[in-house]
Length: 485
Ligand code: NAD
Ligand code: MN
Image (spheres, rainbow, N blue to C red):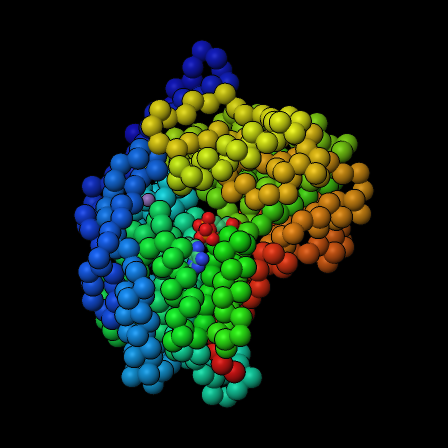
């Protein structure tokens, strides 16, 4: 049981660890590619590690060009032969099966997601996996109702979708992409990110168990080169990409002049705006959730805190004391709030940007917490006294680092919030409903939360403006990019 002890210094509360049991999970030593419903050997394999202790978890296939071609041919063949002819209610049936089997295995998936990517078990158990399940359920329900949202009474699928995802929410990103695509009658080739391939291959096992026809979902792993082979394959009809703005731009260039359809979900540098009339304690929780959720590896993270000048000192004081209670450590410990940074290279990127913040003259704050000796960890951090010109105010850090900027008037808040090349999300904290609407209509952001942050639901669309990309995933909007008409 969880024992709570309070040290001599009263502000320091120590919890005994309460580590999630990982004995029940099954991870193979080696995963081949999942193509045409079978496990297919590759020429090369690479290791995936647990970033919290650097131990190897498994080896996965590294798909080269000929493997990608095989996966795309399998998807095309399956599309032409059966999937586009499968009755919509049957497509829904397979999606319901996937959702239900995933639900039965939710605990195993949560543990594997935390092992492979470093996120706290509390989050994978209550957010990643349940949301992935609900996306499959949600889109299962749409499979036979597409004529109600399409311009045509006979909505048609596009064909083969190439889907490329990042490492921050592996299974959830896969669900966002696979579920609407196959609900609409498309087949897919999906590639996991380098550091987090495991839950996608576990999903492949579920797809087999659900007896989804061979080749409807093909799952592969590899690096950026593998991704580019998907993008360039002439039999791909649609690309759905989630990842960095830089790679998104490259993909746009490589498909220019083809009739491939494209949706891009890219980076962000969201403003979380706290007005003087906000419920301050709730806002402080919102700030914490906005930036420290998933170690800040969140495209829509509230990484720029815009706080009204007259309450800035109070907010910062409350934020500091709240941060002293954040527990950083073993992702499998149920008490952990902040787990491991996903990779060594991401840790390096965060460290460099934090150093630039110090050098450029912002004031750094980090609570007095101990980091584990092994693995990749970074203390929750904020910078105050940040100017708009600082790198930490402009570049996506993708780590647990907040930049605090003050403003005097709502007009100034809006200007500062929009002063970014991104436009994915934003948050508004005020006790006045009218102010919420007045401000949100002037913000250039795809998703805006009021008096909350980082809330997701399969029925609500998600996506960005400007360099955060285009196209929407989730909700009815998320089906349209997978339909011809
Ligand atoms: P990344 O762009 O480096 O990689 C993303 C995926 O693209 C990986 O699977 C990678 O192998 C693949 N890839 C790399 N180069 C490629 C190429 N030339 N052609 C095709 N595929 C290629 O991004 P990352 O560092 O893994 O992920 C973090 C980024 O993703 C952040 O910028 C973050 O904001 C963004 N992101 C956006 C959303 C969103 O919904 N908007 C969600 C999560 C992450
Ligand atoms: Mn890993």
